[in-house]
Image (cartoon, rainbow, N blue to C red; front, side, top):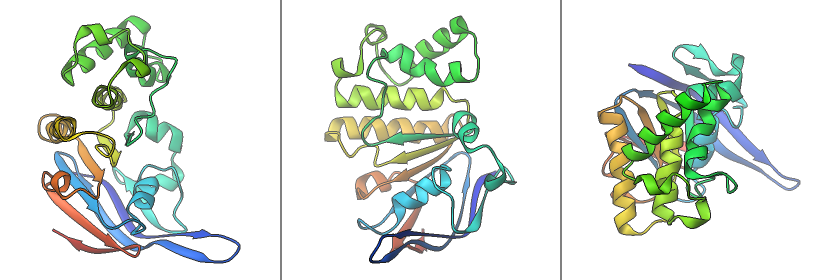
Length: 223
């Protein structure tokens, strides 16, 4: 089922001296139960495309629809709370919250009762392969791989079916990279997420069902 669709997206960055066309007439669609990799050289527009799909930026022209609804007419903060989660290369965990509290956070924003959120968070942390002892640890006490898995557990806690990951393995060693890719792959295969991964790593892209290649702001190939 198509859950997210982009039609003729355009977006430019403007400075005092120049205009950079970051995304140029990009159209694509994403289905649940599949993992997608968006690839391209630095400056190709792939991260800008993710920002548009996440509702972090608005396209200058074109349209994004979520389950057939126009994202431009939706509350974009609510969209990210309830339908689309973003996973970053730098993890972006809250440093003053424990692992358990970080994963509970999206549920608390949706007014889920604390006890229910806590039990759900515990299950999600264990689902991403981490032990109970990490529940009370703060991000600075964790390895990079552990932090990224907590970030993924937090993304699962949103309750949506769209996962947008921006270079999620960029700060990890090969072993942890493999674990994160397996988790993303599992979320598509077993939990019916639409997983969209921005990556320059061909080994990460090789795990995707569909690879979208970008160059100079354009989508040049889908395979």
